[in-house]
Amino acid sequence: MCGTESAKVTGVNRRSPDTGRRLHRAALSAGASVALAVAAMAPCAYAAPPPLPAPGAAPAAPSAAPPSAVAASMVAASAAPDPRRGIVAVEKDGKSIGVGTVLGGDGRVLTALSALGGAEEADIRYSDGTVVKGRVGHKDTAWDLVLLIPQSGKWIDGLRASELDPAAVEIRTFQPGKPKAAVVLAKVRGRSDAHSKTGDSLQRALDVDVRAVSPLAGAPLVDATGTVLGVLVHVCKGIDAAAACTPTLAGAPVSALRSFLVRTPANAVLPSPFLGIVGAPEPATSPIKGVRVVDVAPGSPAEKGALKQNIDVIVAVDGKPVESPEKLSEVVTK
Image (tube, rainbow, N blue to C red; front, side):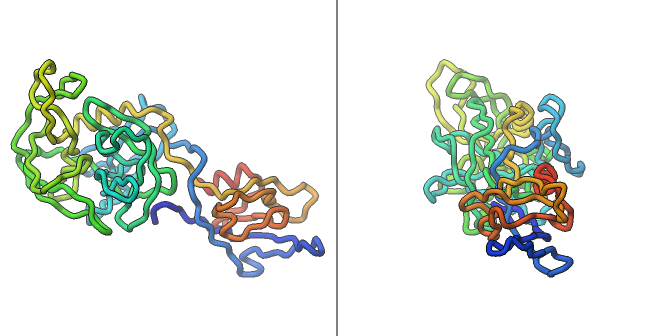
């Protein structure tokens, strides 16, 4: 599910506020478990995504290597039968302003910079209707591309790149729909050179005919297998940068997408899951080993899971023992 990742606190020891007696609620002894939705807040060690691989390439595992060693990817963790699982609506105040593509196995969202209208944040609506806040992590004014960083959860279904000739295959693109994106037929007439509003030369842009009344920028162009051939962006017609800009919708080719993603800053990372507690290890003299809940953040998954400060002790998450705050963080973020 998007927007949250689920971890199960399978062992909680509760100290009675009246008597100070510990009431052991570990799953093995009492059969109790507290399921907590894990929202995202603190930074984690996802690196910039690796270059878009050819079809059939294995998914790249998240890595802490710098973008020079590991660049961005559209590899799906597993091939989604419906590419719309990897398509999102980019919204502002509940209104669709663009379409985006989830980088498969990564979670970040690629869309058109012009769709944001200069904003640094936008809402991301996934195909199940879940909406999360996204922030700009990386942008390219020349190719009109932006990478949005979802601020909670991690959507794992995404798209990968196609190595086919866009002009030689049947192409589809997408418009926002409820809940899933609507499919729109498109055709690549060929390639043409263009330029950006700032005068940058844009070589081999895709000349696209989209059969929609008002196609939205940021939508991917996909082949029949759901792999990506390009992304709809706004450019200026022609190669004469000195001429007035005649805006048009074109396709940023896979080569431009790879070039953009490989330059993703190392700090443009997904937030990591958090429970929303301040924890401390139980004293060595305590018969129970775990993390004592010292404080609970208002509105956090821990509060929703009814964890109580200075009462509860987390002894396990998903069946894995946790005896320190560091170990708790490690287990939750996996």
